[in-house]
Image (cartoon, rainbow, N blue to C red):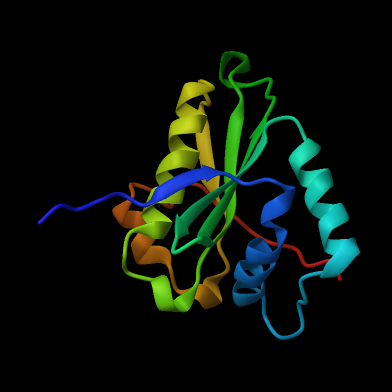
Length: 150
C-alpha cells in the first residue's frame, strides 16, 4: 500500500471560495467570515503583506485544510525574524487524514528556511487542538494571552 502525502501549495486569490468555507468552520457563530467582494478584498490584502503565506492542502479538487504563516522582522535573537502560525483548520470530513499536519509542515519549513528564531502558534481553546500541536513539537513555554477588542 502506497501512502501519498497531501499536496500542499500556497493559496492565491482564486482560492477564496474554498478558503471562505474553511474559515467559516473555524469561526464561532458570532464571528462571521466576510464573504464576496469584502472577503476577497481582505484576502488580497493578506496576500500582499510581505512575509505572509497561506498554505492549503488539496484533495478531490478543493482546498480542505489551511494555515497562515506570518514572518515578522525582529530586533531580538540577533535580528532573526519571528514567525506566527494561525487560522489552522481542516474541513470536518477530512480530519484525521494528515491534511493539517501537511499545511503545518509547510509553514514550519518556510519559517526554518527564513531563519526564524521562534514560531508562535495561535489557536482558539474551543477547538481543543492542543494535543495535535504538541505532537508536532509545540510547547507552552511562553505565556500567550488574548485581548478581544470587538
